[in-house]
Image (tube, rainbow, N blue to C red; front, side, top):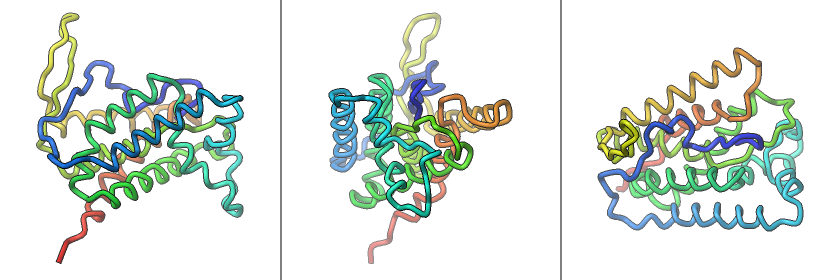
Length: 231
């Protein structure tokens, strides 16, 4: 969620890259595909816009421009999560959403999944906003929302295994890594980086670690409330 770096969900997964989860939902992830398509389409509009900086300035979340007394300034909490800083940014984010999103959608249902995705993205941005209220740096990216999906995946499917590409002596090996290990490892790295960045500079260094960690926690803690019992 930054203009200066690639703050994708891939951050700190450089030593291991997930290929697929081993337990498919066996349900068509309609909403997940719609979200991915929407992100790709907005990225296309972003690339083909007459002014990239103007496009970012209009739809990105710029903390200094937020005024909770003026509802017109709050729309970037939603629009910013559909913007991306480059090809690596959007590809890595959509890859993680594709791997982990279908199971969560199958668990909570199509419409609730869409609501949950937006809910996590908005709260992740709010958490990051608290630390940088006067910043003029634009916050962009779906990372916070996807972090919420990862948190929900950990809540519902901790025993699943994820086939992961791990380089060993420069040779790529695919190993089944427990989802609980992979996701908790990622969360701890984000949380530590957030505390470290704030402690050292009082702000953030271009990557919204607080949004990542916050989105993950929001997803983990609230996902169960989106699973309504059918009578």
